[in-house]
Length: 85
Image (cartoon, rainbow, N blue to C red; front, side, top):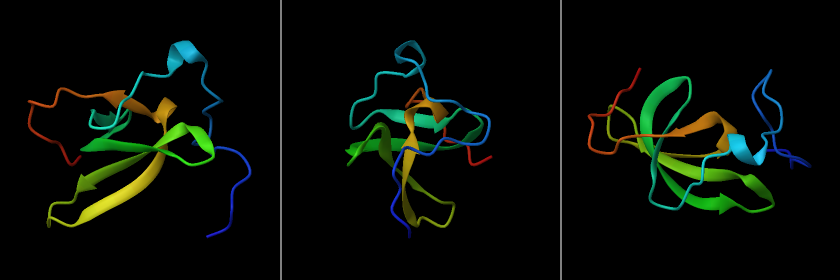
């Protein structure tokens, strides 16, 4: 993997303003704004203050980890069933 020099945001997504960034804490349950599985927020990405590591299980039960820009996440109701779509 090549080192990044700045946070990467999905195509068409600009650097978020503070009002656009949800306040996240490790342990929060989130989803991508576009949908997908529920994920648990971990620690902030080192060197990328607007990204957090997120963890989720796929349908087979395998654990996944990815650093995701906060602007792409929304808090989720942790009591509702997970969606994989």
